[in-house]
Length: 315
Image (tube, rainbow, N blue to C red; front, side, top):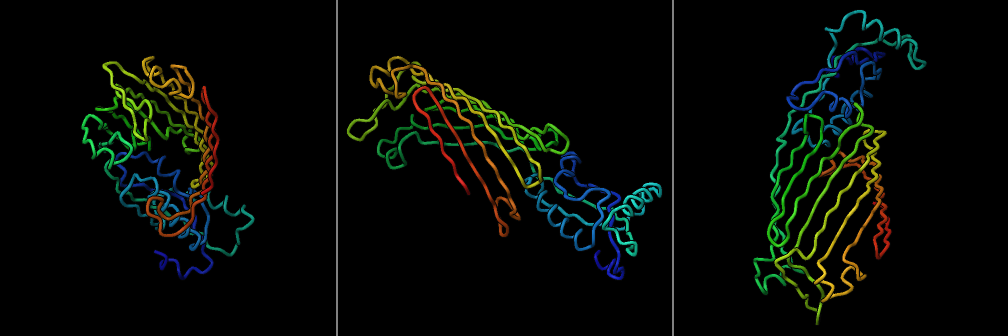
């Protein structure tokens, strides 16, 4: 396609139209906000090729598509009034050279969507490590997780997860993530909640061995939730602020065995945390990068009825 314009030494490309195909589920707005080219963009051929490469990377990193291809061709469908309007705007630009030829092009975005429904299956051995569990082979100390994860809910790149926990530990977990508050996806949020219940807990340690307590009643109940606000001023820049709340309560029989189970002699414990994450991702593929770089900052503060904890990390 570049060869078609090689003879036009002073030609510049103006994107007069963007066509999207292959998206049966994903909304056009979700695709457009990952593309660094807009209708009316006025670029050299080299600049356009560079932005096409960046846009393909951005779309692949959404994990919504198996394949992404972006090409361009001379626009033969836009009406003359629209093209004249674009041309008038271009001529007002300080960087426009009156000797440059303007070639109006249609940007063609073709995607192949992937499967968006995934089972959530997990198995956890409730012991210090595998060797400790193998010594007793206690199958009552196994927790199973089962649920479903749905990506691209409503075609808006939302992610819904719902799972249940069975066995040694019981409970449920729910999350609904990346809910955009505006068409450009600059502001969005995520929410989640969870609960855990135990009839068997590790109440203490004697001679470097854990002491487990069993009961027909729940010995510990744990519930909590979080909300995250995401600010995305640029495609590859993210600011995340998360507020998390956790509530735990133990049966009074646990305090008989260990009066400092929560660090205090209280049956309840309230925990609050505030976390900030910043990421600047310039990798070609976020899951298996081959080129590029990543800068991240993570800071978190946690306070509860019996302790305060703060930490920071730069990646």
